[in-house]
Length: 53
Image: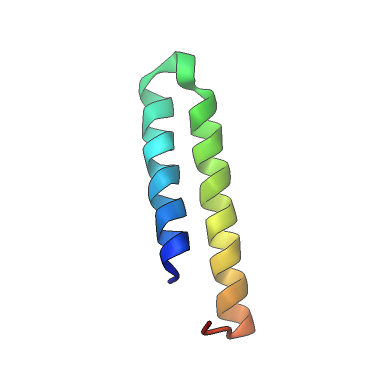
């Protein structure tokens, strides 16, 4: 996986944890989920298309 995707996944997990711990920051949970979904979709597109760049 590309370094960018790893960074996005790490940020998504951190935001999801922070959003889960503090109800006032619950929007961070949604941001984390959205970032994780975007990273997964981008990774799947790379795997299916066969790009190694």
